[in-house]
Image 1: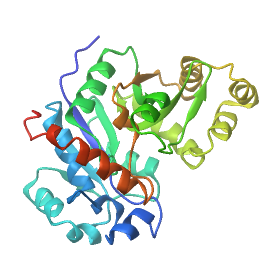
Image 2: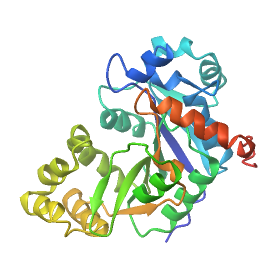
Image 3: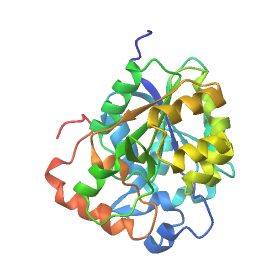
Length: 276
């Protein structure tokens, strides 16, 4: 297996809908600029990626160019060439595909989102190292739901339930080769169903798959094998041991939760060398 040293990071930073509740709550022109403990979410994500030491360059897809003056630090980084900005399209999967067009086919890619305010260099390092070991074309980061609940009792996250456990997404994906990028086309068919996992399983994988899912017969690996067969992409999950990887800022009330987590862990904040 070819050793992977560094990835290009592709960060999706456009709002899913107009009048995003996080943007409204924070008074920002877009969600990515919402300040978390005084620092815009997008800057927190960019800093975590850079401090991981595993990212060779960063491409930012969105927000629209007219909104960039709403975050001075981001605008300055783009101006210096620290990151490359490209315009977003009308959905996350189409935006991801737009970003991938700017990355050579042979380059491994990490895909994440600008609302991952709790992302740390350690999470990035763990996910990319484990992904690099996978005999796979693409990987998806997951965290056990029980770990999220144990660390952050009472928080509400979207849960995907299987016979061998319940999992939360982490907004972390890799495309390890050009075959892995075909998963974006598959994602395009599924993105509108992400909050309804039983419909996702049924519409994408067929009626037998939804029956197995509802009866809790399918395991995570069985589901991924079905996705691999349907999409023609070898896909594997990386189970991330950090509970905070499963918490993003999806709703206005998530701002309070994420800020409380960061304030509690303030001594563990990192600098751009990735040290605590």
